Image 1 (cartoon, one colour):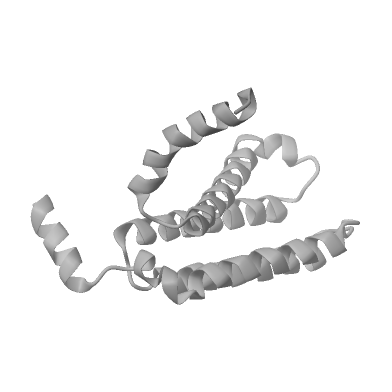
Image 2 (tube, helix red, strand yellow):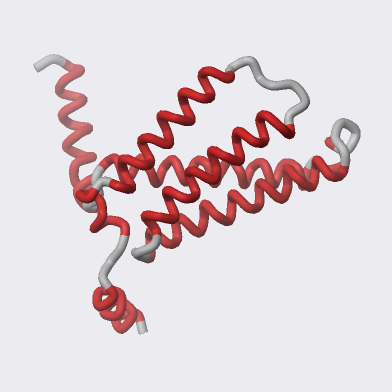
Length: 165
């Protein structure tokens, strides 16, 4: 065993209890991280446009600034709702993840093709990444093996509610 493999074994030994405590597959964790990153980026979009409103006003109209702020707020709150519904174990969270992914991809492409003055040069890459991410999200959400991680039965929620009161 060399230094690299012994360090890897030691690190994975420390990480194994953390991963097993969550009890969820890695692909669901990746999905949640994707939602968290998207939510954080849209929150940053919202905060930036609010903080720099006067400076950006020299380059963009008030309607464009409002559009950036409103869309940032919408996607931030939707992302927070997605994470909250997953944490709560809401039965509709599976379909909500899929619907939000489709809506976000549609908004991205409409914004890119209609709202932007000059289209970016990386259209092929963006299309491939959109298809890849939508495929990953659909695979994770629609996989029957992942269904138990997206919702709990009503009697389980009632028991948990009784314990918290």
